[in-house]
Length: 111
Image (cartoon, rainbow, N blue to C red; front, side, top):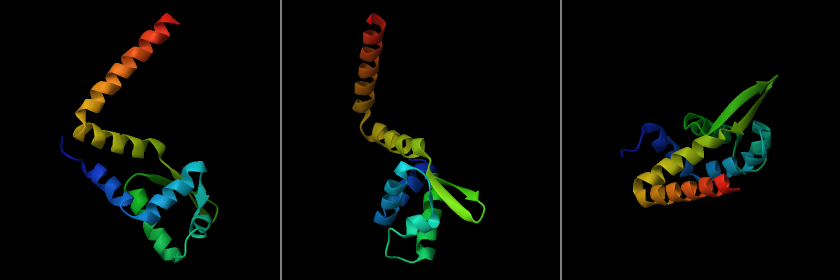
């Protein structure tokens, strides 16, 4: 399997520790740019650039609330991209996952 452009963008976004921390900060819900910036010792424009990379990779989304911009995770995007990559380099994981799913469905059918 060839890595898609979107997956490449995700891994480039994850390469920076500041962006990884922003993603962790957003796991509990949306935050305004100022709230995100307050957690770092870098400039506001630098935070905006990091958010732009995360948005370009499809990992975060933004919405306007009057004069504030709020950011939140696009939760499935990260899991799907990393899962797709892992499945391509560890195909046996797909088989293991398939066996687990089959067993879970068999147990549910009995219950």
